[in-house]
Image (cartoon, rainbow, N blue to C red; front, top):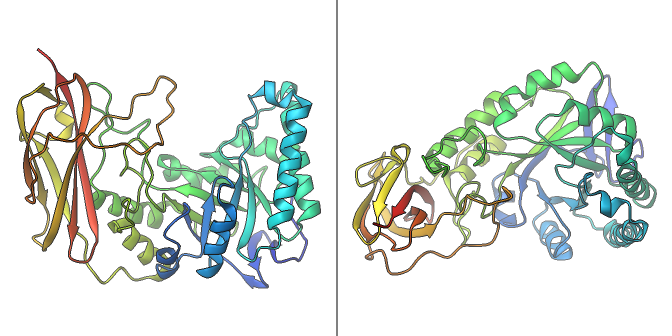
Amino acid sequence: KKNTHQGRVYIQENKGKYTLYRNGNPYTIKGGAGDSQFNILKKSGGNTLRIWDTVGLSIVLDSAKENNLAVIVGLPIYNSDYTSFYNDEKKVKKQFNDYKSLVNRYKQHPALLMWCLGNELDFPYKPSYNNFYKAFNNITDMIHTDDPDHPVMTTVLNFNKKYILNLQLRCDIDLISFNIFSRIDFLKDELKDASLFWKGPFMLAEWGVNGPWQGTPQTAWGAFIENTSTKNAEHYLERYQKHMPIDDGRFLGSFVFYWGQKQEGTQTWFSLFDKNGAKSEAVSVMRQIWLGKKDSLPYPQINYMLLNNKGAPSSILLLAGDLAKAEVLMLDQAKIKSIKWEIYKEDWYKENKIHNTKKLEPINGLISNSEDLYVNFKVPLEEGPYRIFATIYNDYGHFSSCNIPFYVLTE
């Protein structure tokens, strides 16, 4: 359903084409999903941040305002299958009241663009989910009443026709957003297929390189093989140019994932920045997408990485306590300022398939300090999966990264 209120932010439809307006002007979202590097986002041609929760919300909104950016604020709620929560009237009422006071506290903030209720929720049909829909709709109705100046959206994982249909039939939101990675290749076709029953506005709330899940190559013990940051930069550009539905009249914009540094699979997998805010080449790609011109200063160009002269697909086994050699082969001979070598315990395996999001610490004492493109190191003594990382910085503070998983055997 369309929010027709001509307030500060609204979506207008004209002959099947949807336009987002902010402060009276058409507004196409050029977004980063994350809550840091506001200044670089603005300088790169971005205009919007997407956050998943309300932690430190006033700081995020104030920083966004200072940098002339807008924010889509996530209001996290439990998934529909959490029936013990949705069947508990007291808990549901408390959640409603908490969000009512929060919406009313921040609805006047000039950096606020929209509210996003939930992230990657399931929208099933069965009547047993009625309490979930009731709680969901009570919050969206409250926002539409208390803050008609800002649209309300939700996100679904990939493109799920059933969920879209149920959102249409059972909910009142202003637009649907998709978090879509490897499936983006099919998005244009799926949008066309679904247009028989759904013709509403949409955006991509997360897109990026393939995640460490289905379809990513693995070692024999199940460690995901990560591309170099140089290869990832190519993937961001190709993916946007080939598969982003920018010519679709219903498309309102997208958010690249992840604008900052995030531990998920590894600390480099989705991160466009390092932990100190240095830029990887993917930031330059986003600048090219948004402004039409790349960063004028170069980035280190990695070709590939070897461990004992083998690549990651060889499923490298090492003996505890042995010496091993890792090396990085570059595509260019540009001046390298420094190289950081680190070994981490592997972090991909979780009983419940949930990735750790806590920052990991490297294992000390294994690597002889090296400023070269190769390093000799002592293999850890404890059996199990590990990963060796190389982070290469140039004189401009730009970095590139690569890693190889290995498995330690004790005799």
